Picture 1 (cartoon, one colour):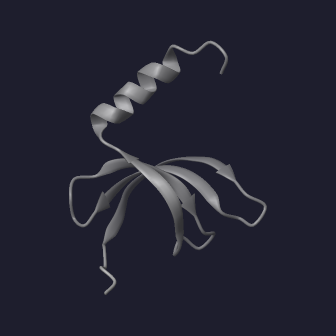
Picture 2: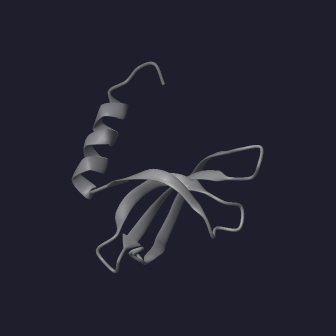
Length: 75
């Protein structure tokens, strides 16, 4: 049995890259199964109907990632 899930892209924040086939790696705020939105990084098909594997971060996790990246000098 396949469990269905719902998602809504609440806010498109940034396109991080685009592949030669048109898929875009994006940072968005996404509500999964009608829950509070979380930061989400994953690839999306050109028409936005298919998604690749990605990661979802809570506000605290996103803040820790930002803090870690802000402290880097090589980027």
